[in-house]
Structures are given as structure tokens and as C-alpha cells.
Image (cartoon, rainbow, N blue to C red; front, side, top):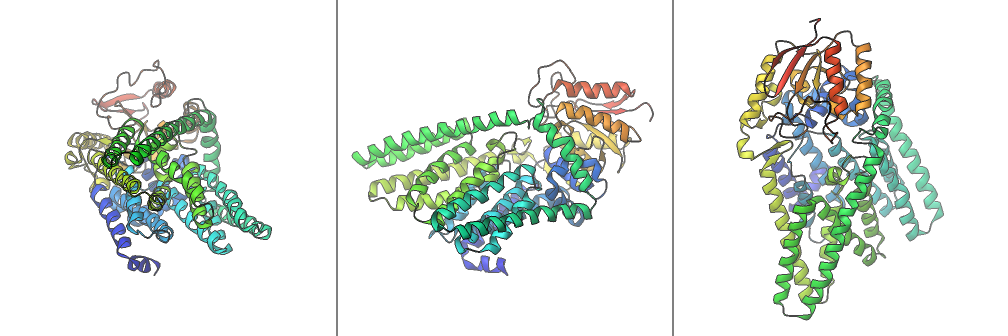
Length: 578
């Protein structure tokens, strides 16, 4: 009923749904990734078969549960079915954002444009459903119900928002930061209403809601007998990752990453602030021709910044300028201030806990920020008394936005996630039922086909296998169980990987077939043999850790493994006992 009402309200809602659906269908059937997508999809495949084998993924329990249920219902659709689930999630995000923002803009299509800007910022196309997409959906629902609760004094909607925040913690553990939305918004609301009674009720309702959300998830864990695995995952993985010097998620390295993120944004703020101040002065004072020249200069500099610093940082920088001015301009309009506070908090809080911060999670944190800033940008320039300045800012905005969309679409045509190269070359299938509707390049399809043919001589469905260390997707294709409690061993820090080897040797009854990669991974270049791929004495980098190579070599030697097959991309090893 709500969806029918939404689609019948205006033509822009229908166009928005159509554009998102069409985009998802056009790009969703291309691209083969050995790492990320297979990591999550293997976990969905095993959660109800052998949940302990994907213990690491229990850090994303609600995502894992939803993916597992989808696998039960639509797993026959393979990769494509999970990419269609992503499209469904994105459509839901659009619904909740448009439900609020369309009410504050007279230009209805601007919400669709802002949403597409964010969608195209994710220049890898569409990935199989994972925790970042689900986090964005929960954030959108939370924002929607929080805004409506403050705007209408509805404690029922505040309770719903708080329950969602509690559940969202288990979508992705760092989402616990969104609890910070509540005190910030309560303070903003108190500033306008000055009601201690209302503040007390808000705190009480939100606490009960948060607790309820957590209890709901824990109850589900107990029903499915997943609670012990979740606790084990926390102890074995979360705390280790936060403290280990070899982890990509240790607190120290993430802190410096965030500092660098905001340093990049700071540079953009200074550049745009200076540029707008100078060009505005010139446009005011001189001939109208300066208007067009100034707008072109801003658009060209914007493209340069996107190229040098990254589109996400440019979007953040420009949005923060609009947000800051809007806080001042609309300080007496609480409804606008509520939205500004929500969008700003989501864009700052959601990247916390990601190894690359804004560079990784930023694209999923700005679904509210960008459409809201476009709406406010039009409102702000509409208040300008100077017709020249209005035309200048409007033209600069049109050139920058249209140029950015074309640039991103061009990038999307030239790559998929971890599968670079023109989409025109991705027209070959890997011979697996799970990939029957997923196309990649001829070379990658042939390489995987060769491995699947040879590995079938040594492994079968349900076996424990060690794909070391960036080939999680092969677990999904072969329907095998991860030996090290994680489909993607590379995600372990080196110290934790050592503990997991010792643990598996103690708990597993048999030794696994070991399949190793030689290519440049994680990434797109896995067909190329990496220089020193098996060396233990190279300097550590983000993707290479010498101790991990030493660990796999020690494991193979300790159990007398024999190399039974290899080519320039893969190796297959069997223990002497087989």
C-alpha cells in the first residue's frame, strides 16, 4: 500500500525507481571478483549448513542472516540473484530518503538527481548484497523515523528508530557509532523546545528501544544456535583486529586514516572557499561574460580535484560547505536543522571502523547528504538578489554535476569491482551454475574454468578446503567449507591467522586440500604472477604480510603436502595422508 501510494504521488518517484532498476539490471550481470563478493556469499551459503566454518563473518550477523535466507530462497540464481537483492535494497533506500526530502523541495526531480549522484559515485557498478548496503538501508530507515519523531513529537517513531539502531549494530559492528545520533539530536531538539519532560521521555524511550533491538538479535541467535559462534567471533577476531599491528583495522592505523581523510576534505574546503570568494567578487564587479568563464573555471577545477583527490572527497568537501552555510541560514527552522544534523552525523559516523574510512565507506554514508545538499543549494541560490550571481551559481552547479555524472558513467563503463577493463570485453561465462548469468573477460573465465576442472579431481561439495589467501569466491563455486573459519584468510591479521591455523589443526579431523594463488591479489590483476608471491622476506605492505606467507609454507611443510597441479595462476596441494 505504501509503495503504491509512493509511486502514484508523482512521476519523479516512478522515474527514480525506473532509473535505479534499469541501472542495476544493466551493470549487475558483469564482473567477476575473487575476493569480496565470494567472501560474503560463501558465508550466506554456509550459515545454515556449517556456521562455524564462517565464524569470522558473524561480525556481520544480521547481514549474514538475511543473505542466508535469500540463499535458501533464491540461491539458484547465483551471483545475479544477490546483485538483484542489492538493487532491491537501493530501491528501499531511495524510498525512505524520498519520503522525507521530497516534502522540503519544490523541485521534485532534484532528489532523484542527488540519489543518482551517490549511486554513480560507486564507480564499480553493483556488487552482491553485503553489509555496507544493508548499513546504508538501516541508516536511511533510522534517519527517516528519527526525523519524523522529532518533527511530530512521536515517541512511537523514536522507539522504532532506536530498535533499528540496536539491530544495526549487528549488521556491522562499527555501526554502534550511530547511537551517537540520539544524544546529538536530543540536544538539538531541546534547543528549540526547551522541554525537560520531553528530553527525559526521549532518553527513556530510546534506551528501551536500543535494548529491545539488541535483545531481538540475541534472541534470533539463540533460536538458530548461533550465539556461541558470535561470541567466539568477537573474541577471536574483533579484538585481535583492533590491536594487532599487522591488521588493516587496528585502531591506530584507522585513526591516522581518518586524519588523512579530513585533511583531504580540508584542502577541498580551502580551495573551494577561496575560489568562490574570488570568482564571486569578479562576477559582481565585471562584465557578464565573467559569469560564464567563472562557472567553467569552477567545473574544470572540480574535475581536476576529482581526478587528483577522489570524487568522494570532493562530494564531502562541497557538501560540508553547503551544510555549514545552511546551519546558519536556516537556524530558525528546526525541521531543516534536524535534517542537517542527521545527514552530517551519518556522513561522519558511518565511515568509522572502516580500514580506508571515507575512502571506503563514504559512498554508503552520503545517501542523505548529497540529495539534501542539492535541495539546499537550489534554495540558497534562489535567495540571491543579484541575477548575475544566481545565474553564475546555477550554471556552475549544472556544469559540475552533469560533468561529474558523465565522468562516473565513463568510469563505470571501463571497469567492474576488482575486474578492470572495458565492459565490452566482459562477455564470457565461467562454467558454473552460480555464475551462469555473470560475465567476465575471456582470460579470467578460462583461468577459473581450468582450476574448477582440475580441483574437481581432489575436492567435492562439503569438503573443508583452504583457498589461500584471496580466493573466497572459489568456496562459493565449489560449495566447500573454509578450513580456517573464514572464506577469505587474507582478512586475518598475521597473529590471528597463526592462532586459527593452530586451532583448526586441533579441531578438524582431516587436513584440507590447499589451493594457492600466484597472482596480484586482492585486486583485478590476479592473472599476472606476482613477483615474489611466495617469498617470506619482503617488506610488509597493505596486501602482503611476510608472516602470512611463512605460516602457509610452514603448514605445508609440517604436514608433508605435495604439489599435484599448477599453472601460472594457481597451485593445488595435497597432504601426504590423501
